[in-house]
Amino acid sequence: MGTSFVREWCAAAAGLLRELGYLLFPRGCAGCDAPDEVLCSRCESKFHHCIPFRLHPGTLHLGFACALYRGVAREAILNWKDHGDEECDGAFVTALNRLFDDLLAFCRQSGEQFPQAAVPNDILIVPAPSSASSLRRRGRSQLAPLAKALCSHANARGMQTTVAPLLIVRAHSKSVETNGADQRAQRARRTICINERATHDKEMDACRTVILIDDIVTTGATINRCATVLAEHGYTVFTALALAYTPSKHGYMVA
Ligand SMILES: [Zn+2]
Image (cartoon, rainbow, N blue to C red):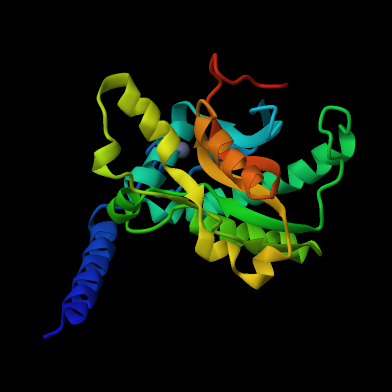
């Protein structure tokens, strides 16, 4: 009996148990636990915003988020991201697509604040990468369905977008590990690199403008690193879209 057969069987059994679980224990809202909802309308409305936030001025000026990362919005994202609540995909796809439409409108209105007044027609949608260990733990890239749906959404508006996994998190070798603050600094610097395999794709190579997407932007360190790596490889990062943003002393909201 091959290992692939065993794996398939286990996946099927897990799926069946999950379905059975839903029957026995109907689900609650991912944000507030209200009965029989994936994301209730009150929690869902927390993702209706278009919150601009400032990023590193050298590479990327402004990002936009659907929600502030707090309360029920935070709860819903954590349940989706870290507790396997994949049923939230639909709500977050809708939120990110709406944010994209808001971005188009925002660019038309505020050319001064946002130097590139028009969104270019050809865009690569680049998800912030997850580490191999996160991918293993979650069993998927939680941003993948959002990136794919955003592409379809933009293309339906006459744009030409492609999902481009241009970034990867590289596992860092044990030999470079030092201790304490040095190690943490190294870890922060280490990981996000260009995905050479994706950059060789002909379709992606023709386009050099990128919109980054991520789920949560806290200090902006990750998204800034993504933007810097892309800029170093000749890409123009137009903006970053996130589900939620945490205002802090490191980054601040524009509006
Ligand atoms: Zn709710």
